Image (tube, rainbow, N blue to C red; front, side, top):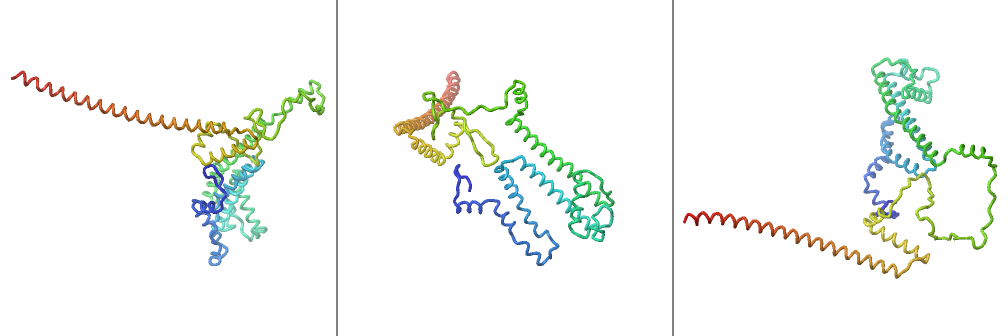
Length: 347
C-alpha cells in the first residue's frame, strides 16, 4: 500500500496504477527481460548478458531498510550488512583479478593466477579461492604478495590500494560507529549494576526479594484501572514495536497544522475519536453541538475580519492615491500662479 492524505491505501487497482506510473517501473521491467536467451547464440562463456540483473540494486537497498526497521537487533543487522558489502567488494575485485590474469596469460609470471597445469589448480574452486585470497591481501593492505612485473599489474595493484584506503576505511569506520552507538545505547538504558551491587553488599542487604504483598484492605483503594480509563499522566504511554523503530513526539500545535492541510484525514480522526468517546459514554452531544456552533461563529468572524482588513487596505490605497493626485493638482496650480504674476506686473 501507499499513503494518500495520511491514509493507507490498500486497493490493488490503485496500487497497480501508482506502480505503473512510478519511475521505478521501467527499471524493474528491464531487469526481468529474458536476456538469458542470448546464451543460445553467444554461448555460456559470456556472463555479461545478465548484467541487467544489477539494476535491482535499489530494490536490494530498499529491502535492507525494511529489514532494519522490522528486526529486533538493528545493530547486528547493520554490522552484517557492512560485512556483506566487504565480501561483495572482495568478490568483484577477485573477479577483475582473474579476468586480468586470463588476459595477460594464466601462469605467465608469479603475480597472475596460476593456470590449470599447476597441481591443485585444475578445479575452478581453487582458482576462485586463490583470486579471493589475493584480492583480500590487496584490499586489506596486508602485503606479502608477489611483486608486479608489468604495467597492467602495477596499475591494478595501485587501484586496489586506493580502493582499500578510501572504501575499506569508510566501511571500517561505519562498523566502529555502529558498535560505539550500540554501546552508548546500552549504557544509557542499561547502566552498569555493579556499583549498586557493591553498595548493597557493603550495607549487608540480604539477596532476598520482598514477599508478595496482600491486597489492600477495604477503604484504602484510591482508584482502580478499567478499560478506557484516562486518569493519570496522559503524556506517558507504553509503545510496542515489531522491530527497530524511531520514536518521534508530535505536539498538539503541529498536529493541528498538519490536519489543516489534510481535511479528509482530519475528518477520519474526528469520527474515530467521537466513536471512542460515545463508546465510553464520555461525549456530551449538547456540548459538542455548542462547540461546533462556537467554532462556526469563530470561523465566520475570522472571515469577516479578513474581509474588513481587505476593505480597509483597499480604502487606504484609494486615500493615498487621492492624496497624491490632489498634491499634483496643487503643484500645477502653484506653477500657473507663478507664471501669471510676472505677466500682470509687466502690464
